[in-house]
Length: 162
Image (spheres, rainbow, N blue to C red):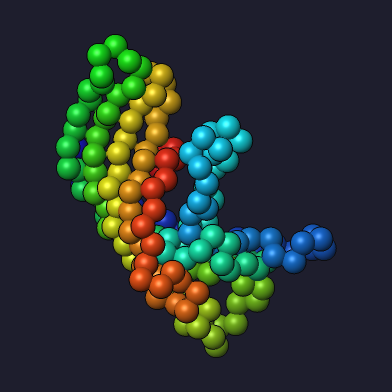
């Protein structure tokens, strides 16, 4: 088990005559009941700006950066009796997200268009059915723009690890 620093940068720009005005959206996690997420094959967006409502910013281009520091807390590698569910690892993470989705990125308004959030998470790595790896995140994020959740946001998400 080792400490990890995750640095991620993503950008995309679309053009053409796509019928919808906003091609890309950034924002926080979508809240959905867990059984609906599994039953409908619903996956959370990779365009995350935690601490903000889902789809809060939209446009024909998006830019996102993430810095996340992860530290190991416990390494279990244990299951319950003969059930095919195993608890692998418990980790902690502190992060900062920085990004936007806009129609046109005006360099003169750079600071007004980009939004920041910070937070912390507990990550539970599990294996289900011997083959399906999942990471459950229990976290708190606080955004610093007017559109962010007032007082921050507590969330719980089950996803695939990255």
